Image (tube, rainbow, N blue to C red; front, top):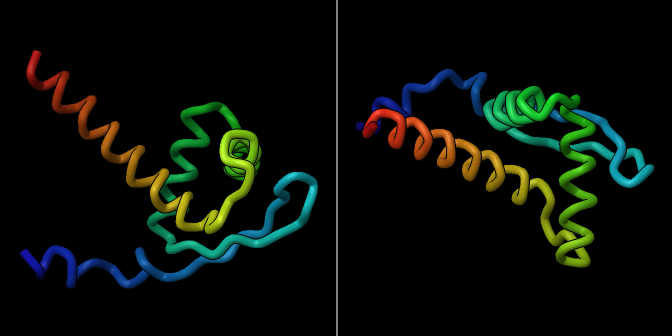
Length: 96
């Protein structure tokens, strides 16, 4: 089992920094490449650019929670939640 995880391509977990605007402020976000791939896919599915998706998410979190303690962690967890929802959807289709 550990070979699956230990043997993954190092490029998948290489940190990648992207510059974007959040609430009209220029900033940069550093995430592992695998998370950027997922975020790009989520944004594409929503019909928006990745920066637009991330900016909208940031605004919605601010509106709902008043602040964002660790936005990069929130993005990673959003990716995990998305993957779980996709897995649940696949499982329910397979069960039909």
